[in-house]
Length: 520
Image 1 (tube, rainbow, N blue to C red):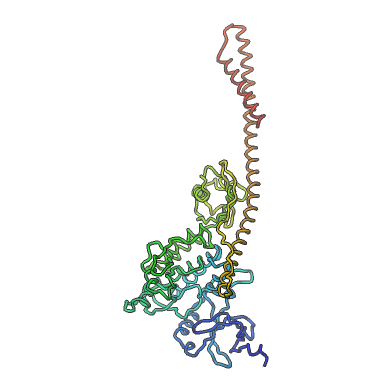
Image 2: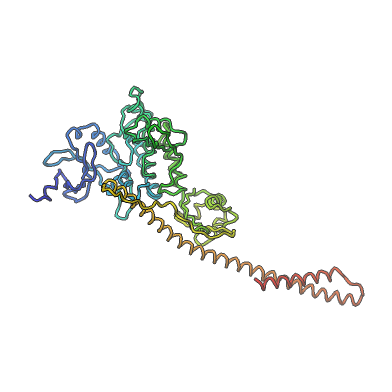
C-alpha cells in the first residue's frame, strides 16, 4: 500500500494527514483537516481514548462553544468520528498562526510582542472576555497556550480564546468550587487550596480570570511567566505560593535566583521588552490592577479602553537622531502635549521647535484645539532644541553580542545558542529599520526648518521695510518742520530747540534702521 495513503485518515466529513499534526495535549491531538465537499480547512481535535471522549471536560467545551459565537472566540463546527477507529472528533476553526505560546518561542518574540501586536492582543482578549462575561461564562484557564492567532492573507492578526474544557456558566454573584486552570497562571486562593492547604474553604469568582489574564499579558510582553521561584513553580510550590500570595504592593513579577534566596521583585516591565518604554509605562498599572486578589474583569475593561483610545505618535529628536514612540490621550491640550515632549526630550517647551506634517505644532493647535482634532495615529512630530547643542547620534548599546557555540557537541545547547543568535539578528534588523526611518525624517526636519526660517526671514524683511518707510516718512516731515523752523528763526531770531532736537533724533534713527536693513 502507498505510504501516502496510510498517512491519510478519513472521518465522517473530513480528511487529515497524520503528518500534519498542529498540536498535542494530554487528552487529544489536533490535526489540520480538509472538508470532503467544500475543501475548507478546519482544526480536528481527535481524542486519544474513549475516557477523554466521554469526559466532563469535553461536555463543557462543546456545551460552551455551541452557545458562544464571537470573532475573538474560536469557532465550533460540530462533532464526528474517524471512520476506521471510531475515535471522537470535534471540528473547530483553524487558526493558521498557532498559539500565543508558540508565537512567543519564535526568535523575534522571545522578549515579547511588539507594540502593535500587544495592543491588538489586549483589544481582542478584552472583547472576547467581555462577551463571555455577558453570556455568564468564565473561562477559568486563560494562558498563552489557549490564545490562538488567526493570520489572514494580508497579514492581519485576530487573537481568539480557545479550549473551553474548564469553562463554567455562572450567575451574577455566584461562586464556583472546582479547582481548574494552569498553575503558573492560577489565582493565589485557588493555588493555596490546590497545593498548600487542601482544607481551605473553596469559593472563587471572576477574579480567577482577571489574575490569569494579568499573568498572560506579562508573558506576552516579556516572553516569560511573571513569577519564577528557584527550580521552577512546579518544583518549588511553597515559594511560588509565597510569591503570588504575599507579593509587595505594586509588584508585577518576581524571580528567585538561588535556592532559599531572596526574591527579586519588579514593579515595572523590564527594558528587554519589545514594547516601547512609553507603552510599558501605560501598561504597568493595567497589569498591576489585574494582579490583585480581588480584581475584576470589569476594571480591566475600563482601563484597557482608555489605553486603546490613546494616539500613537512618533517623536523624532533631531538633536540626538532618535525616535520615541509616544502614546497620548486625544483630549490633550497643546500645553499638556508640550509638557510631555519636554519630559521625554529633556528640553523645555519654550526652548524647542516641533513640526507636524511640515507645520509648526503651535500653529496647528493655535485655536485651543485638542490633540485628537489635529493629530492622527502614526503622525511624526519632529522636535529640535532652540539652544545651541552639539548634534550627537544615539548609540545602541543594548544589543547582546553573538554567543559562542559550545565545543562539545550538544544539540540542546546548540539550539539555545542558535535562538539567541536569531534574536540578536532580529534586534539588529529592527535597529537598521529604525535608523533608515530616522534618517528620512531628519531630511524632512532640515526641509521643515529651512522653510520655517525662510518664512521668518520674509516676515522680518516685510517688517523692516514697513518700519523703514515709516521712518523715512517721519524724517521727511521733520525735515520740513526743521526748514519751517529755520525760516521762522531768521525772522524772529528766537530758535525752537525742541523742534531742532527732534529733527536730529529722527535723522539718526532713520540712518540706523537703514543701516540695519542693509545688513539684514
